[in-house]
Length: 75
Image 1 (tube, rainbow, N blue to C red):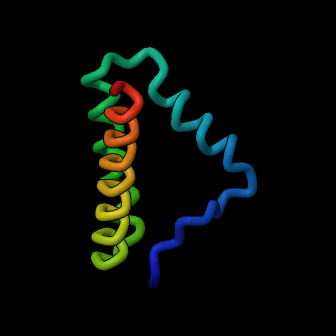
Image 2: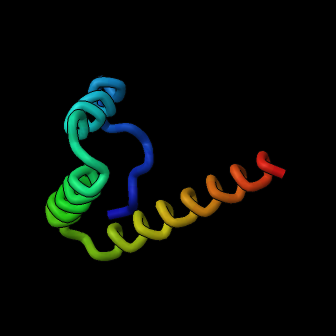
C-alpha cells in the first residue's frame, strides 16, 4: 500500500481542529506525550512497515525543509 498524502477526511479542518483541541491545556511535556501516543496508535492502525518508513522519511524531510526556510528568513 503506497503512502497517501492527500486528505482522506471529508472535513480536513475539523480533523486538524480535533488534534489542536486535544492539546489544549496540556503542558509541553504532556503535549509531546500525547503526540507520541497518537503516532504509535495510528502507526499500529496502518500496520504496514514500508508505509510507516515512508511517512517517517517524508516527515523528517518536511521538518528539515521548514527549519532551513526559517534559518534563511532569519538571515
